[in-house]
Length: 151
Image (cartoon, rainbow, N blue to C red; front, side, top):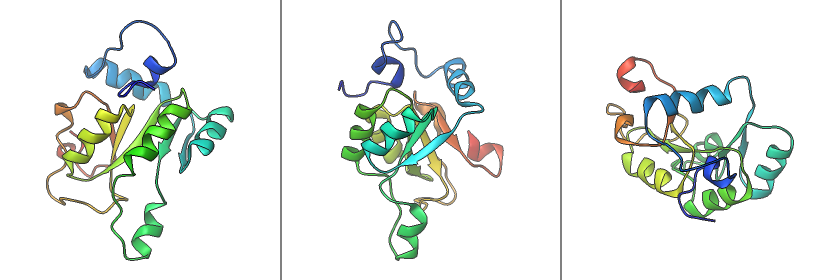
C-alpha cells in the first residue's frame, strides 16, 4: 500500500486526487448520503462490511464506551490498525481523533484516512478549543453544538 493513499487513489478511479478544497470535501460527504458506515476493529471486518455494501468504515481499536467504562482514556486508534484497514478495502476509511487534539488529526491525515471524525465519544483533549478543520486537506465529520465547533 502506498502510504497516504486515499480511497480514490487506492481504487484507481482516475488521475491525481484533488483534496482539501471545500468543493471536494462537500462532494465526499455527498457520496456517503443514504449509505451505511460500519464500525470495524479488524481488516477482516472491514472487508466483510465492504462486501455487504457499506459506503465507508470507521476504524476503531475498541468501542470507546467500553474503554471509558473500564476507566481508560479513549484515544485515536493504533496507526498500524488503521493502515491495515486502509489496505484491506477500497471504500473510504474514517478514523476518530479526540476533540481539540490536532496532532491526532495530523497523524490520521498522514496515514491517508478519507475522513477524520473529531469525536465527542473519545476522551476530549481540549473541551474549549476544537481542531481548526481549515488547516487540513482531509475532510472532517463531527458533532457540534455551534458553528465555531463545526469549523
